[in-house]
Amino acid sequence: MNPAIIVFIYLAVVLYIGIFAFRRSQQSGEDYFLASRSLGTWVFLLSLFGTNMTAFAILGSSGLAYQRGIGVYGLMASASGFVIPLTIFFIGTRLWALGKKYGHMTQVQYFRDRWECGHIGTAIFALTAAMLVPYIIIGVMGGGQTLEAISTVMGPDKKPVMVEVMRGGQTVLEPKHLVSYEVGGAIVALVVMSYVFFGGMRGTAWVNTFQTVMFLCFGTLAFVLIGRNLGGFEQLMQSLAANPKTAPLLTRERIPVEEFFSYTFIPLSSIMFPHIAIMCMTAKKAASFKKTVIFYPICIMLIWLPSVFLGVVAAGQFPGLKPGESDDVILRLLSANTSLAISGLLGAAIMACVMASDSQILALCTMFTEDVFAYYGGKERFGDRVQVWTGRAFVVVVTLVAYLIAIELKDKAGIFELAIRFAFSGFAALAPVMLAALFWRRSTKWGALASVIWVAATMAGTYWLFEHSSSIAPKPGQPPVPIFPELGNLFLRTPGNVTIYGYLPVMFMVLGSAVMMVVFSLLTRPPSEATLNKYFPRREDSAPTAQPRPDLVPVA
Image (cartoon, rainbow, N blue to C red; front, side, top):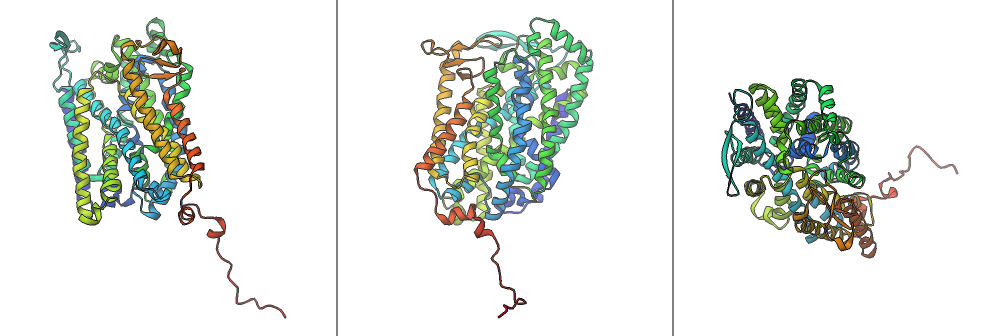
């Protein structure tokens, strides 16, 4: 039995969960997009965590660890385990309270009301939507890679059966797969689109809860089984350390200090991701956030630690893979070191995390219907029911576009680098906008617009520098190369990124965004006093007025 069959059974179960949620739904926008703000504590925790753990965390982290070593865990997981729970506690709870009080369903709705801005809110929507699409794309890429790798035809010697294929006009040998990358990506995109289409937020939350539990259980089992089959973790570490080619992977040698420091800014992106912010508004009560803050760091460790370690182990088992080819190394380890049935079961568990793009698709759909369709009069003219079906139609369009781009990017971009370059950096740079809106009374819409323009310009500049320097990109393990030699080390090209004096652009994007927000807010007029008092009530306004007591009679 091919392991892919078990994965298909898993996909059928997921589809059933989403459709079952449809039967529980109400035909209203708030129910479809926010599950009527009714998620309980554990569903909220597991769905919020599952929403954040995507192909980036599983395939992307192991693929980068294959290239750069065990230090990848410190790049994201260590900082994320501290920063993300704090942002959920201080920002997520405030978004939840304000959303419940004033009916907000998206960040842009809050920004428009908070800063009395209309079209500037639309500009924020356009930028966040453009940055969210790459994150959706990596989910489709991860699904295609997972199904392709898990359906590899193995010979009696447990090695892949090789076949001749044409690549770039040349005949090369590649493993034989029952499901191609293109077909696998299409299947995953279709399944995700279907249960998001029917189930909305309730279906997405239930599926994410199921998927998170499944991966935490079977992902740990995969970690143990692969390590045991390869001789135990102690022997694996010794063999990696003894090999001159893999020994650097056990250190931070391939990750410069400047780049390592830059990654501490990346977790700021979490609460600015629309799917995370919207998910924060679905909790039934504020107490749900307490357990999330406590257990979130533990869940991060359980996901990232085995993924990074197995990526390093794979470097000794499958040497010579390019950055775009190393994202499926965990799946290769599964096929080579476990039975077919176990491989399929564990492959389904990995698929569970890979498919977390559902919440991003739903978030983009929610933003379009609320921030564009409803804001510009569509809901008033056509009603709540048409708004929901408009959102469903948008789900189909977004999924189709993401699939077509994912097919074009096969083997051309690593999942980790793609996410960092286009999604995480941009959303991290928007964090000052959210912080100013929630906690700085004097902030203005013009400060927000200046920050948005800064982020868009720096994203475009980073993209141009990356494409311009693609021909001189060094291989993993090689030193950075100056993009413009006459400028010295100002702009450097690494294997997967562009740096500024060795630091990732995200650091300058975040700091520049904060400066723009402060300077332009101080130079422009704040919102009306009524709006400011609405979101920042003064103590004397919120304090109860002293009432005279009738039982106290003044003494003459």
